[in-house]
Image (tube, rainbow, N blue to C red):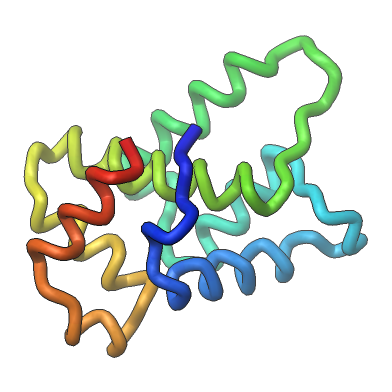
Length: 126
């Protein structure tokens, strides 16, 4: 998993928090795999249109197939979001895609952050 302390902009964390809260209907602080898929959709990422997201979710399904239901807390969700963004960039082998994915999360506030800073922040996660 990814260590994110001090690396990911607060706006991204806030956006992930909002998506997590929206799908954590019972407010127990954990979501299941189905909720995880809905949380990504809430942030604008569609499993059916995105190979990286499809692959990440499929790997998680296989990992937990036949086991007791797996739940993800917010920290795990945030780490999976960062992992997804990295997989997406790796699959497309293009730093521009990674920056674009983060900018999707941040909205208009992202314009003030340089591409070099985005890349260095994400590389610090790994």
